[in-house]
Amino acid sequence: PTFPIPASLQELESAPYNLLPYPNDFEDDDEAARAESFHKLIRIVEAGNRSLISNGLGLFEVPDGEEDLDAWNDTERIQALYTLVRKSDSLAPATRTRLVKALCDAVHGLSEALANPGAVMAQTQQSNDGEEGGVGGANSFVVSQSFRDAMACHIYMLFTVMFLTESKEKLGKSLNAGTSSSSSGRGGSKSKSKSSKSKGQNTEVEDLAASRAACAEAMHHASLAMSEHKSRLWRRGVVDEAIVGLPCRIAYQMLESSTGVIARKASSGDAALQMIAATVDSAPCLLNTVVAALVDLL
Image (tube, rainbow, N blue to C red; front, side):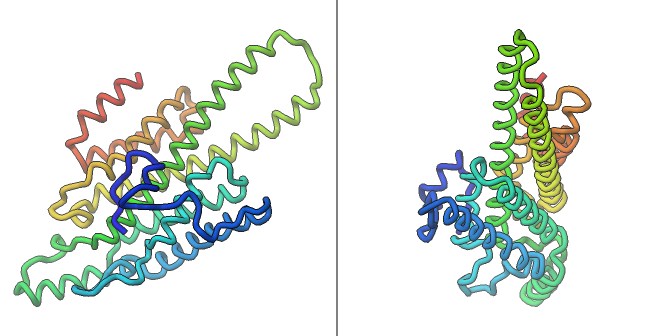
């Protein structure tokens, strides 16, 4: 299905996407059934990732005049991604970790397929040479619309997971600040419970940092791939600003949390800056918007 970048996640329940909050076969009679339903959705995504790694760009190439009846990024996969991303904040920690890994693996796989089209590009060039008398070459190869849609879909889903993570982190910091200030006047009570709570918070912080780093790495890989191979991704290298702008949009939020050396590392601030640089390289037309956003962060 065609995947224009929506204005909000909930817009995916309207045309042209027409997704549902949950698949029709999603079972949530009890917690066990609900957990198994989420695991089933994760398995759909992971199985698709294995096909992507094995077949690369060949998954998206359909001979002229034929309909793609077995699309890789089909409605089942998009629906699974939507439900998982939409409910990512309420997923069990292990399930959410699997979701983040599956999304990052998919974005890495798509970026790698774009960078190394291999046999697909060779076959396309041979076809073009035969039809056009040898005119074209490597610069004339452009990926299929189904690949562009898959790339847009997965970058948007990764962006949304990162956006929800950054928003949750920001809210957590403000709540912690309020809690610490209100309890500062109370003297040493229940030090053991405080210690156990502190350990739990440290584990959560470490898991969050690992998740942010993995997402930032995948988004950076995608921004570099779109920058270096824009003429392969879009005809005549005319970029889709809604897609290439997604890494910048999340980078701004990451930089808001990058105050100080430790916070900069925890929030992947360096990766955020690299994502912005790659975006400006691929779409110089966004330079003024980027500069204005960065100035606003100062």
